Image (cartoon, rainbow, N blue to C red; front, side, top):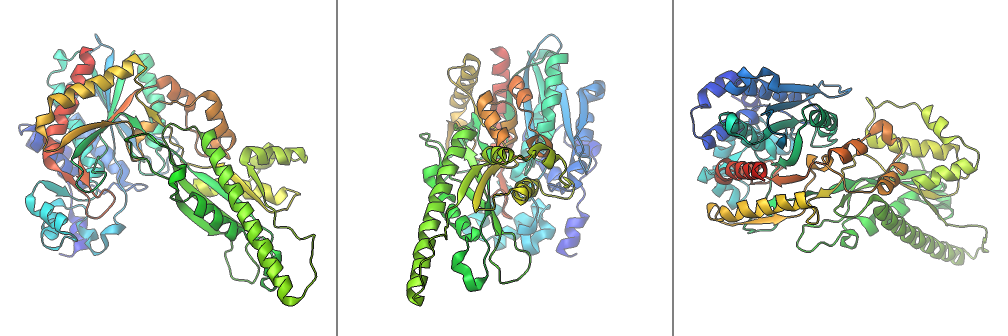
Length: 568
């Protein structure tokens, strides 16, 4: 059997059969068996596998006796205008006598498997991957982990099908004690976390409905997205009390074209782009400083000119965008820094070109041309719209008449298309840089010690980790910001109305291409923490989850936090 056919042949047992087989096992074994079954399901982001895994999980939950007796306590929410028909899955153990509710949530999608190369056929086969890595692992650590049988390999094993399994088995645990519960446990499983987060974004409306119709008091959301070591030999098992935010700042750069035979008379947008990139990309000066936290700088995700065929004309314009993590800063503070870096880059480019041109003139014994300039204007998108309106252009009507399709165009391309189309009707064709934001936008949030209800959650985490400190070989560490992007970003919001409006004003077609429900999130305001499964190499072909902590320790921690939240 070839590797490819091995992958095709993998089929998890039916949800009903799997539940029947594992219902009498110890919880750790239940979690392992369910994780393995979920890894067998290819649920790559942007494929029909996201629908398949949602249907599998819904059916598995419905096989649990509590939900057989309460079929209305399991339901799905189709995502709006989704081309694949993806959906969120919900289940609740509800006691109408209590309003206190703990929300468990995980994401169902994974990244793709191109990184597996010739091992693609084994990507969803944990046992055979372990056997392969035991002999042929790329490092001694991977080989040792594969031989120890304490690690499960496979795409999604740590990011984050083991997390789903932990939450579902804990749901079973509490369903068997439903009458003793002093609150409600709500499970939410979302697709589309790995790029656009539209699963969790659509869930905001549903969670708000549950708050209002069922009077649920959502005390805390517990995500269990993967945690890992932050440096080699890191002994910590991290628990996070906040979610980092993300902006995608974009630079649309318009130059002055020239024939290569007159290259020094032009303004090359690729040169400006390179200068901007050099000043922003991986620049720790632009990262925030919060003592003891994992702070990361901006990262360039795309840089290209817009020529699509060969000729000897210099490029007309270029594009550049960055991943920009935000922790406590606001979008307007970030924009201020970006404008400053763009100004530095343009000034440097101007000085460079003036020197090169002067050298050219001196070499050829040519007279000066004082009218030639390499000055570049810098606008935020909001400023550029005002600039156009002052020239009599009805920007809103013009954009409304633009021809683009969200089904066929990347959301970032749409934002660039809007800006570049505005440049086409701008009477001012002087070189310029327009800075704006594009999808995705992830809000940032964190538990605040000055807010009593949030401080109590921090205290509960300290109590539980202290009580269980002997259960792990390393140590527990409670930190503020989960160092990776997370759906938890969309459950509460800390930016002010003015700061959010500044973001929207600098975000082309925000309400059309990425309408994050800001006001609804602000009203929802669910404090969020991340108590994650532990593993290594997420998004790599050696991805693996550490079974002793994930399948035994973590479920106990989650239950204890849940019970203490109810008690308080």
